[in-house]
Length: 150
Image 1 (cartoon, rainbow, N blue to C red):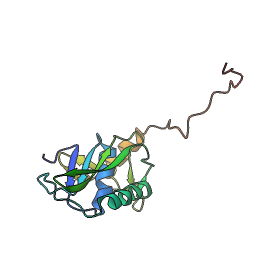
Image 2: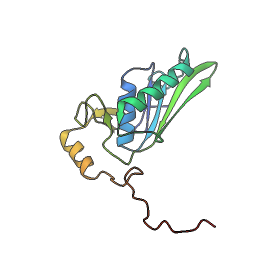
Image 3: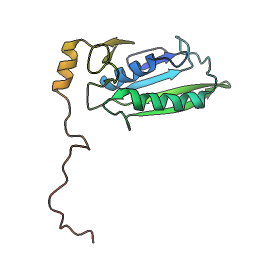
Image 4: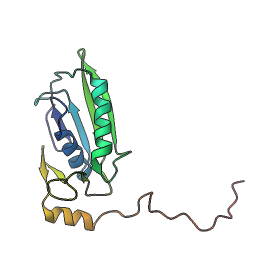
């Protein structure tokens, strides 16, 4: 296994996890493995289940707009060593960003080949201008409520 545009490896959970998730949300989606070395060999994680729960919480609380429903975190095992697998879908409400930095180059990331890179102001503006505005929270219900369910 090698890192590519839609796949990345991390040895341990760091702040880079959120950056990687933001980058996947802003591009084509992808899979992030934690507990693997740079070549994709499983080196394992201590307390992988607890770390997976912490990762879920971090993704939910540090990334905007909400990425709920756009990622899945699971614990895998290979040769008795556990790792965390984070599968991320491409987001529709781009740009996604790190809450603490806002919609700025320091908060917005993209994938360039197998690397995660900060977005330029121009890239952020371009994504913002094409942003999908009809999300579930903004879709209006039909006004004709006289329809029968029978």
